Every structure is written in C-alpha cells, then in structure tokens.
Length: 261
Image (cartoon, rainbow, N blue to C red; front, top):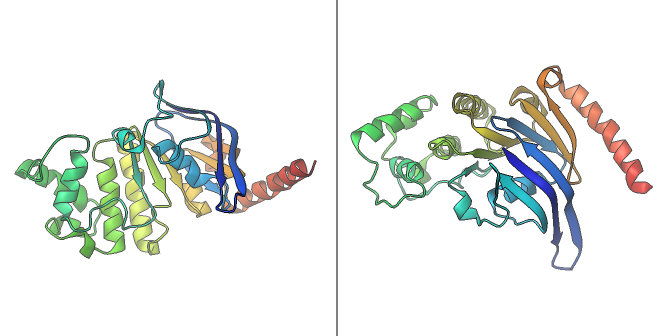
C-alpha cells in the first residue's frame, strides 16, 4: 500500500512567481491497484509521479510505502521498489548497449555485476520469451544496439525492463503518447497483461480518455492538485468518454465558483 499524507508542493519560476501544485493532498493506492490518471495540463499528474519516484521531494507531508516513510529517500534508492516507463522512448534505456545488455542490467538492478553476469543461456532464453510475446520481432535483435531500434520497439523494451523484477509500484507517464496507434495498442495490451499477471500496483497517466476507461480498476481525475474524481468498480465499467467529460465540466464549474468565493 502507498499512502500520500497531507502533501504540499510549491514551485517557483525564475521570476519568483509561485505555483502551489499540492495543498494538502491525501491519496491511498491499494496493493494491486491499476490506476489511470487524467487531468488538464498543470493539474499535478507528472508531479504526483515524480513525488512517488523521488525526483521531487514534497515541501510537506509524507509518502508511505508498505508502512515505511520514504518521503526523503533519494530517487536512485527507490529504484529497488519503484520502476517507471517514460513518455520519451529514448529514456529508460542505454542506447549504446545491446538489447541483451539492457535487459541484463535491468534484471540485476541494485546488484553488483559485470556485463557478463546474467548473460547465460538460461537467461537469454527467458529474455527471448519475454520479447517474443510483444510480437515485434525483438527476440531476434538481442545483439542490436538499442539506439538503432524504432521508437515503438524501444518503448516495448523499456516496459519489459521496468517489470522484470516485479516492482512494488510501476509508474507509466504517458508511455504510449509518442507512438503510432497500432504500436500504442500493442504496448497497452502488454502493459495490462504484465500488470494483471504479476499483480503489480500501477499508475498510468494518459490524455486518452477512452484508454483511461478501458484500462485499470480505478480512474482518478486531478484538477489543480486535487483528486476530484476517484471512480472504481461497476461505476468505472459503465463510464463513457461523454459521461466523463460531462462530469468534469460540472465539477470544473463548481470548482470555479469555489475559487471565486
């Protein structure tokens, strides 16, 4: 379980202008949750993920993972619990290394090893099986430099790498946004399969409302740093894009009134 307790975070521009993103945010992520996150630009979606992965330390409040306070644990030390796939296909992999070397590095994250460690026949067959399930032919490119792969192939590799060791939490920051529709669909379905098979607690930011409805067991909408909707179960299954937009319009009007008064 992950608990965000009374989080505060303010950013300052070079001109000294301040923007308060979180103003006492409280949010609980249950074990096994697959949460899709939507919201307008500046709502706090990426900041939320960056607070979880340790890239951003909140000004106040606590981040609790499985009963342990990790609020001030630095990003690289959280890597043994938290994995992330980024929007940019060039992030999350080492372009000058081969596919096999990248997989071996991910598999042995946090361990002391050299680049021959984990490259035995048994591991190679395991990696090939994982890659073959994507249907993109990556299993035949184990000795290809990652920098030579297409964006879609690279993003698929990033997903496999991020989930090899079954992290406590998987963060997906619009990880299909830069891909063509066909490849995006492949990765989303593979994402769902991996998460469900391994019961990985996951958060996925998306701007595609239909994807937010289709995937996951919970859908949250952020607005001005607040969770204004937390939809789950049968209610989520009955959602449509039109219904979701109408809910936001209604809530946005109420929020605007509240801000005025």
